[in-house]
Length: 403
Image 1 (cartoon, rainbow, N blue to C red):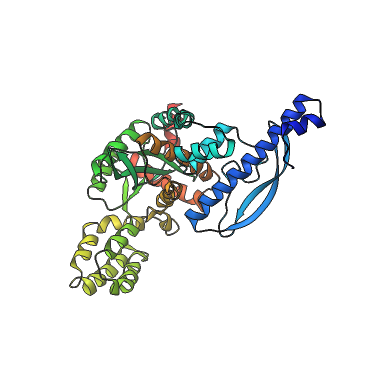
Image 2: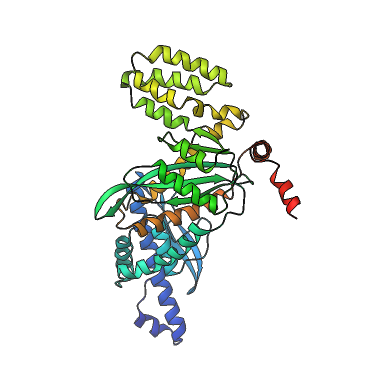
């Protein structure tokens, strides 16, 4: 589409509405193309990617149909501008663009600067904050909603993000992921307590709150090796099976040894947790202790204190074990959060951090709904039997009795 000014358009046509709509559609095309270029620059910097030309796309907008909008591409990874969902043929309103940029990790100042450069109009940070503050009401609902489904498996773990509270410090975000009866993962809760380190007491408080809101009768909880975390979980859910994350244990162990021995120690640890039975696990662990206890007693002590909880997954069928011996499903979510927030680096207040987290959670939970765990029907039968053993008769029987 060629560039026009209003004078040229009026010379060609007498229909003022037609003139106005064509002019505005051109400005809108310019806005979208420049926005895409800026976001590609940010994407390439963060992901060490490179530019790879453009492709064109047509849109149905509130200015009518616009054609030939140039959409930037990248070479190594998939890139979509914030205004464009895959295969989408319509555009966002301006406030939706702001929210999408915010979700993608742009700070309030970045959004203000981008809009001013593209539209030639100055927007205040307060205006952007007002748009994003609409999310706060949804966050409140999210934190207070009742759970009306059963989540047999829970993953709990914390991640660190930088937050300014007078001074800048890395602060723990406590996150709970569940797997529901249909085999879908879901981020059930996140919370910031304000402390500088992860605390089992905070986990206990969060789990009590979730239980009061209806998160009842889990069968299995997988967590890291935080001191006191098992006791905190079992106080809230005394009948649950507790699995200490094997991958966390491996990482902690490697921090206690010399670089020279990493390969051999890693292989020996793998030989422990790849066993099919508790007996095999313990036999390999004894060999591990005999080989390394003199050289690395601190590493052996790490395993010794959590040994029963490291073997919990062996109580479950072999098909289930790859999914329940580690907190990796939740860690993958944390990795996505870190990717989105890398550009921001430091959040200026708690609300800003919560807004970005919540937007990422909404997107990820939507994505999780489209993917059911492999072999889930079999897993569900196992988990229902475990639930009946721990809590009494099956929930289906309870419902029949109540009705």
